[in-house]
Image (cartoon, rainbow, N blue to C red; front, top):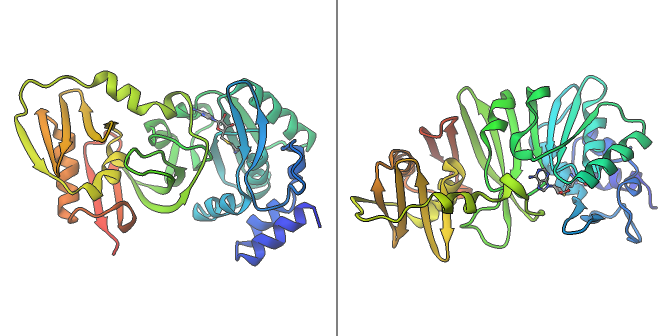
Amino acid sequence: MSSPKKLYEMLKRLGYPENIAKAFGEVPREVFVHTDVEDVYSDRAILSYKGSGFYSTSSQPSLMAEFMKSVSLRDGMRVLEIGGGTGYNAAVISKIVGSNGTVVSVEYEEELFEVAKKNIEKLAINNVVFVRGDGYFGYPELAPYDVVLVTVGVDEIPNSWFDQLSDRGAIIAPMNLKSVQFYQPAMLFRKEGDFLVGIYKSATNFIKASEMLGNLSERLLKRLKRCENYSEKIQMEIASIPILEVVTSSVGRLGSEYFFVDEDCSAIYKGDEWFLCGECSRLKSAVKALKRARFPDLMSSRFGFNEKRDEFLVERLY
Ligand code: SAH
């Protein structure tokens, strides 16, 4: 059998909710991928477009179902997708949110944006809006969103997503962390008042984002200042570096060394200590929160930050 029904049955067998499995069963994936894969209804990521200097893949269906389940995707929701590609995932989401919901899908590559629009038109789907742009900025014009679903590896969770999220809204995003090799931890966040609170979900492998969403290290490096005098040092376990990366968006890596950059601060991490140069109030505040939780690792904790990223929350789960 090679029809969307195959994905429906597979996802049901794996225990996914009916509304999610059903949506995969309603979208013809062959409209969105044009490679000679003998079976477009296998549970695999498939190359969907090859441009000059970029490409796009239609993500693995069961992983997308996992992302959708983690944010409790349902009828009537407003969803911001980052990394639209040729539009397959946006089409699936559109079936779940229905005519009372909206999908806004941001894609950086102009060619892909055009292809995605045509594909969606072909299927006469009318609750998806494609946007050409850097997903870093989200799309404030149609905010607020109940869910931000990210299908590209990102270096950070930009404040624009925080701003454009409704209260209790959720973000699911695979993150390119400098301290995690070989995979991108997918992180699930929820907006709780002034805080965004997250946990680790799963190990994933996506295309790495281009533009602002994918050049955090370069931006931080440009701001890194040479230090004449390290005035202070504070101890921190190396296991907590991934959490520090996520909550501060200010950790870079040069070779095997980590550094932290802020307006009033530059710091480097050696052994198990940060050597501080300048005020470093945000770094101190984050390390204090980590210390209170006895320096957990990414997978064993719940962590959060306020919009200015000068207040942090860290709790051990195990
Ligand atoms: N959701 C898509 C899969 C996308 S693959 C689908 O269902 O087919 C990741 C996509 O993210 C690629 O198309 C890539 O061009 C896009 N991308 C990369 N960097 C981006 C950025 N900064 N902003 C928006 N999209 C980006």
